[in-house]
Amino acid sequence: MTALAQEQPALVPPVLKKHIGLYDTISQTVTMAYRALLRLRRTPEQWVDVLMMPFIFTFMFAFLFGGAIAGSVADYLPSLIPAIIVQSVVQASILTGTQLREDMDTGVFDRFRSLPIARVAPLAGPLVTDTIRYAVITSLTMLVGLLIGWRPGGGWGILAGALLVIVVTWAVSWIWALLGVTARTTGTVQGIATLIMMPMTFFSNAFVPTSTLPAWLRPIAEWNPLSHLITALRALTNDGVWGTDAWWTLLGAAIIVAIFAPLTTRAYMRRT
Amino acid sequence: MKGQPVTSIDATDIAIVAEGLVKTFGTTRAVDGVDLRVDRGTVYGVLGPNGAGKTTTISMLTTLLRPDGGRASIFGHDVIDEPDVVRQLIGVTGQDASVDEKISGIENMVVFGRLLGLGRQGAKRRGLDLLDAFGLAEAATRPVAKYSGGMRRRLDLASSLIAQPPLIFLDEPTTGLDPRTRGQMWDVIRDLVANGSTVLLTTQYLDEADHLADRIAVIDRGRVVAEGTANDLKALVGTATLQLALADAAVTDAALATTEHVLGTRASATPERGHITAPMADPERITDLLIALRTQGIRLAEVSVERPTLDEVFMTITGHGTADPQTEITGKVAA
Image 1 (spheres, each protein chain N blue to C red):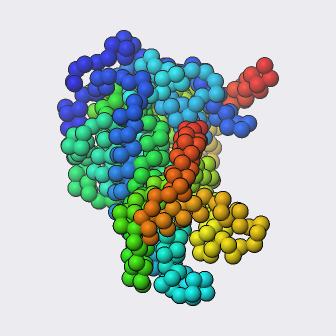
Image 2: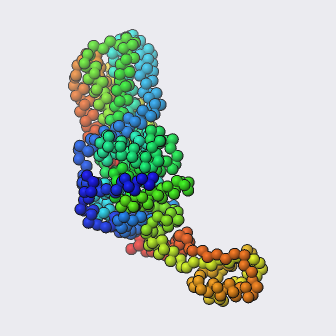
Image 3: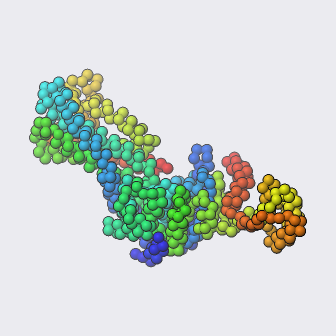
């Protein structure tokens, strides 16, 4: 330990920066994403639900409702697989919020606060890394679909659809991030998020055609942002068409980020 | 890059100035008008019991908490107006190890190094050097969750030193450490100062402040109740005390009378155990006292002289200090 004396003279940073620029903010966010990746690697149990969800949901819905809703399992798959993807990925994004809450309670966040880094970096980093989970869920669900008889004709549209879902879910995860920063416990985050997501996923066009809904519920299900995402994904995967729904969801995603990213950062800075 | 100090911090020899810092949580004034002045290149000890406001004070000085009143600056840079500049000048080691438990020691160092602007290779090299210096080289690739308390604390301190900050805050750096690890931590702190760093440390251990700190602030209920060198503080309590243990407890009263008479001060006694304690203003008189006791046939089992400890200083200062600050607080709030 005494080696310290000779080796490390106390230096003053050569340049004292008044503010943190965009380049530094991006590079710090990348470092935070790298940290989240290291954590993800060290906690394999997080992967269990990520890997199981596509199988369970796809099988359950396809064989349970396929006959009743579409006449046969094979006829149900083109509308079901995109819906399952959206439902599972958005559900998985809630974990982003609970993990942020958990992470913020550990001492390492105190250090982040005392470092000369962009305030948004510790929040944005994990959100970026979580897109890996979304990508895994999306591709696994597609794979399961293919195995049980889904034959999408979208070509490159399938890839575009996957990217659209991931980008939109990343945007949605900022909502959970705000919950994570402001809520007292991880349970609160989980509870509130599930309360929002349950009706959102079921009062949509995900599993049943909206034409079968009662008149008062139909406009709600059609207006539901998730319905637009699901419609966009169906068009992209099955027919390779980038339609207006895709544009609407992208716009919606941009609005969510524009509102929730600054709110979350401000809440984080105010929290002590 | 080395040896290019920035003039703005070169110009000042004062590392920390705090004037009337206040922080309230609800109705509690956790910090209630703290003034501090820490010279560059010194170790400054902030001493106080749990809940005295030490951590809150540090949090304000390190930009983690916004003061409700007063002002503070680090090397002349205001903590409220220029937090990002202040953060470039400080290293902070908190009470709970501020490191990521889930990843390994070297991964922690690389993440912090990258955040501070080092390149991938640079961060790794610097990390390995520091881990080596803190005796953590072997544990570098193990997850921090598997580290012992002492190792975690060392990793924490190592992380604070990545950017070679000129000012280092250590919040109770040795709380919960075994004596050997504590000794190692003390060596590290001495080394830091030998290099020209300035260190502010908080502690509940009075001997720690006594051993390490050039100056000490005693803090109680959010206020600085005494400030000075260890010797200044000891002088507050007064001189050393003389302790006599009598061979026969039955003669305690007689011995007490003689002691008070010869020394010319008041003394106290524990008659059941035959112990007498007296302040020792003039060491010369002890000879007279011992002779007088022998003349009277009072036999002694033990004679010792005790210098005041910082514990006694603390008891003395906060002991009668509590009533007065309290009334002052109420007065201030009313005003």
